[in-house]
Image 1 (cartoon, rainbow, N blue to C red):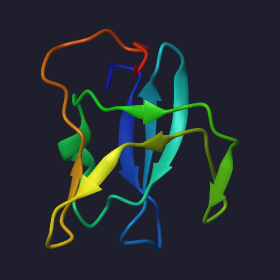
Image 2 (tube, helix red, strand yellow):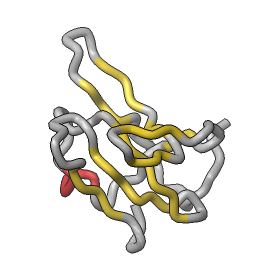
Image 3 (tube, one colour):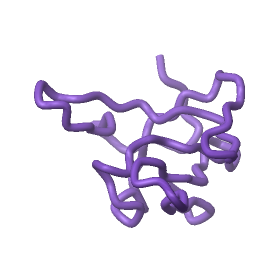
Image 4 (cartoon, helix red, strand yellow):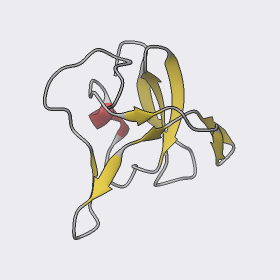
Length: 93
């Protein structure tokens, strides 16, 4: 996440986090990762965001993308990591 990015909890939700992410353009994403990640733990992370989706509203907040994550055999959520540094807005192939 770049200097224009941030993450914060959505009020009245223990699951949702609202993020401003730099995907080559600043974009708001609401993700259900709050039980696995504190917002401050996401600051500075490079994450993979799917952006070719219709906007969706979660608890009245518009989301313009989806963070790619998976769960292990015990249901623990993990954001998909990158194995090297890439520029914001790089395409997933």
